[in-house]
Image (cartoon, rainbow, N blue to C red; front, top):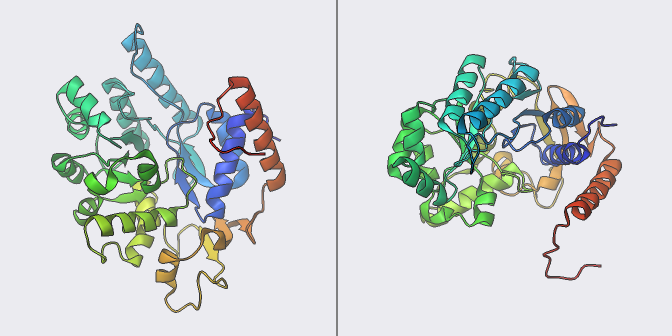
Length: 358
């Protein structure tokens, strides 16, 4: 029973965690869009998942707001969440100074987030440049493109990960390479959002230059293996090169690169002696697998997300036979439907579905 006064966000957090686990995801970093952090952390803890989460922070004044007060309030949120949910290196769940990104935070907030990350040994993530609107805003405001501005502020580095980066140019790519910052690529979100990824995306060049590229979904109901497949397909076609992103590299993007970008490469991302036991067991007795002759290639290219049989996180089994060992799934989904209907009724959100559904 969730004690939270924010049941919608708590239920949504558990649904998201359950979906990730059933897809074989054992660890995630959230996008900094949580409004009720305590409720979300309590809900996530019940699922057994590993993750890093951030409260919603937009520290740039709008309209008649006092810029100094808005920035100070945002910085106070960053400081509070890290104090309440510290990352001691072994925590299953912890808070990071995660920024919504784009143009939503002042320079003071960026500087504070980076200073907190440096002081506490954690990471900063933020959305940036999914499409041309971010570079246009930064050029109009600062006379510099986004990564140029962040580099001038001194807030890039190995403990920073920027989500999207589909609309950076070659000069920004050079900055990304030199800074050691990580990139989080969300191909499903890029295609659904019409980012122009196949036309302007520089992810093959990033990887060739040694940038650590992680995979994400940015809220889209997709699994990380599908993200790897979509990324490979997009750039093989865009570069007319069928040899881009071979199966082994696709699996590394989904495992080793994510662990490295989260600063957890010494703990997770591979099955080795001394590592934490995050294990995903796939059922290969399925027609999508067929006879198993090359397990890594078949896992990367054709294994269905529904084929995840069991999942262990930190040695504890959280999924068995495709079902959660910790949650009452039927009750969770019933609660989610009820909460969703109540939210729609309360907010009077319009139904934009063009097809009649009965």
